[in-house]
Image (cartoon, rainbow, N blue to C red; front, side, top):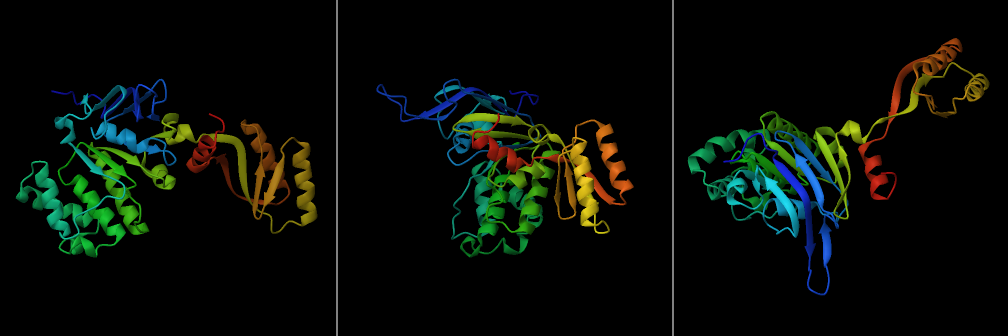
Length: 323
């Protein structure tokens, strides 16, 4: 019997190579020479990011027992990955999944649920709320061949959740889904985590990951480049943005003011309606700048620290920037 306090996922020194033989190591898809270490706590929303070929799908397949690891350890719900016990408590929505087009959505849900040991009545009782939450109630009795791509994604998500799993793996869950559908999926993921379900997301849509994930790993060439919370991955810098209304100030006066900032050691740049000052982190510098602006009669509509977005951090890391 496994402990409910163990992580939902634990990976230690995990490596996976394809095509190895006595004459070569083959292609190292995951872990490089030393392997990767990873832990996903229960009830969290975990985001796995990386370019194509980074090893994201390989990692998920190892955890699900669909691919054999080359070395290291992989645990799912406290047991070695691949065992039938933990797999029956997992939901999975693969990327570009294929559903039986000749079935209705409701029929497909019944078959999927019965395959993991649920009764037809149990499935019918629980499918209603999920179908309603993901706006699929009116389409549940239509043939899947009539579904749009977004509808297939949403019914696929219901299929992954119908047996009330403890861990859900979602590979590009919002691919092809319209903004309303994406919002519904985000809300569903958030509610799952609040209820104690662990959600493991692979996605190229960094904005989606940024909005819902508690912890994020960026993977490239089978290796972890960076791991942390959103705040840890995208810390604020010392640069401060001052959102101004300079409409009542002449270009000459504004130019003189910018020159004065330059002399004070605040290299400024001006965009339409916004002044960017590269200030030090101390409040005294910011207060001096604000006093100068107010003295010149320039209204300040907002002050905020400059912060890199997740996309900026991702691109910088993947392109080989600062680690």
